Length: 412
Image (cartoon, rainbow, N blue to C red; front, side, top):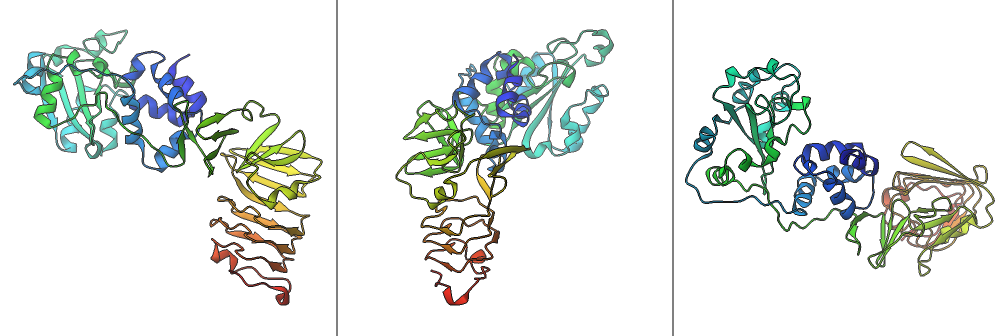
C-alpha cells in the first residue's frame, strides 16, 4: 500500500497532505516515510492538528529528516551556482520580488502552474530561484505524450527553493507540476544530480545550510516518549502515569496496551477506566482518591453514541450523561441522581466545561479543585460545600447560588 495512504489511515488526511508536501524525497523510497512515522509516533489521527496548534511544523520536519541518513557529498569548489548551472545548460535566476517570480509563469501550461505563482507570499517562507534551459524555446510540451518527471520538458524549467530557517530544506519543482508524481522532488531533490558541486556552491554563495542528517531534538506539548521510542499524546500525567487517547496508559515509560486491545470492554476517559462489561468505573492507579467513582455504583445500562469526533455515554436511560471529546476527555457531565459527593470529586479534572448535578445538595472537599475551564454549571439544590470548592475557577465559583444561605460554608 502506498505510504501516503497508510499515513492517511493512521494519522489522518491532513497529515497525509502535509507529508506529501514536506517529504517528497523520502517518499522516493517506498515504505520509508510510513516506517519513520510508525516507528517514532503512536497512531494518533490528530498529530498534525497538534503540530499546527503548537507551531511545530518546522520542528517536525527537521526531526523526520534527522532520522534518516541523507549524505550529500561536499567538495570545495570556487564556482557559483550560476556558473555551474551554465555548464549544465541552464540560465540561472534569483528571485527577490513577487514580480520576478511571476515572470516565469509564461513557461508553464495552463493547469500546470506552480503553487508558487498563486500564493503571492512564497518569498516570506522560501528563497526562490529558477533555472531555465538555454534551448527552452526548442523544447515543446506537445512532443511529450507520456510525461515523466525527469524527461527533457519536465526539467527544462525548474524552480529551486529553500525554506527559510535554521535548516534550509530543499525542493526542486518540475515544469509539469502536478501532472506527474512527486513534482516537488525533481532530481530527487539532490542538487548533485544536476551537476556535481552545486550543493556546496549554493551553501557558500547564499549562506545556506541545506538539510542533512542532524541530531535534532524533538518535543511536543502533551506528548511523552515511551520506552518503545514512540511519542504518545497524553491527556493526564499523574505520578509518572500517562493517560492517553485510544485506551493507552504509559506507566514509568512502559506502554500498557491491555485496554487498547480490549476496546469492546474498556473505555479510558480522563484518568478513569469505564468497564462496559461489569458496568463500573475504575482507576488504574489505586492510590488516587476520587469520589467521582461513587456516581457509578449500581448502574445497569450503558449506551455509547458516536457523534463526529465526540462520544455521548448514556447511563441508565439518561440519569447520567457523559460527553467526551476526540481524545476521550470528559467535557460535559450530567447526573440527575446524586445528592451528596464526597471529597476529591473530579479533583484532577482539567477539561470539563459543562456540569449539571440537578439533585446535588452537598459537595465535599476539593470539589473540581484543579479545573479552570468550566464555564457552565447547574446545581440548583446545592446547600453547602467543603473547602477548596472550585478552587482554580473563582469566576464560575462566585456565580454559584446556594439553595439555603444559612447552610453556606465559606469558600477557600
